[in-house]
Image 1 (cartoon, one colour):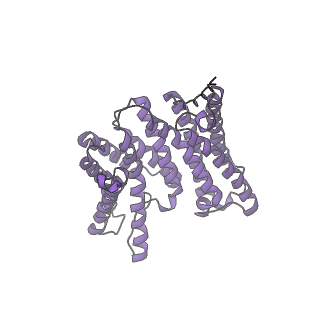
Image 2 (cartoon, rainbow, N blue to C red):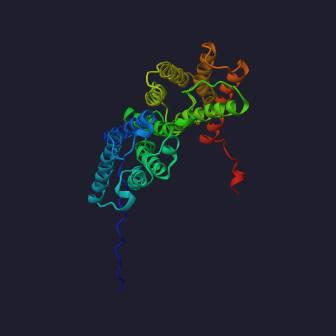
Image 3 (tube, rainbow, N blue to C red):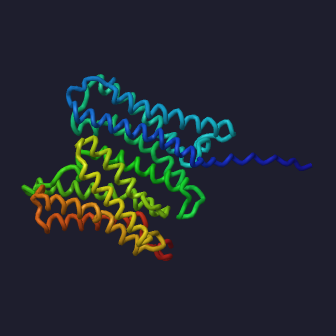
Length: 343
């Protein structure tokens, strides 16, 4: 007599987040993002006078984290009630957020302990302390969840608004957090003077790094989606507004310039239709995207007499920023590899 052992039930597949769930995550994630910029503004304004961890700025920041942490936990609980276990309990893309929540929490406890023992950091130390880097990593994992969720949706490149816009907003939040962590190197908030080799090298290096940070999320999104008109305008406008309010309150020309650059980039998307299937168009867009930012920015500074950079220098740096965009596009959409290379 043969005994048949029943097959073990297949593990339940991860659920997909709905557009509404992604939007809730984004709303709470932007609460967290706004909080970090307000906290950065307070550090820049009050400096050494901040002598305690318990400030209104930290309250805004950490309450945003608490809200999004509870939400992510609720999504995981729903999956667990449906019979899914482990990372599969969370919607697709949200296992990253599930990792980010305890990582951020660890950074928060460490940050409070660090401030209690060593005091409040001032200047660059406030960005690069180990606990703050943990907070940055945890927040990035949380904010990336809607992007990963939308990326994995079974939708075409010209995805519905409920798929592509959460991805754009998630990428904008990641761009803003990354910009925040590089505020001391942010090339859009200072006019390079070119008064010496060492100073000029540092100023122009900041511009090139900022150019790469701004171009990277746009090119990454183009790897998966056909971006709707207004996507780059939103990304660049919102990110620059946050950076300006934090670093140079009252400045209006730079946000206006980035809004215009975003509109130019959106028009180029319509004109060139860049995609992995059209690599030449993608490379052209990747070159023109930084050029649309840095050509007018540096040229405007020169025209207004706010920089001592020569025509050759500021125009050359703008072109170098464009070439950096081309290099990034080669990483996002590399050229095809011959079949023989896999043997």
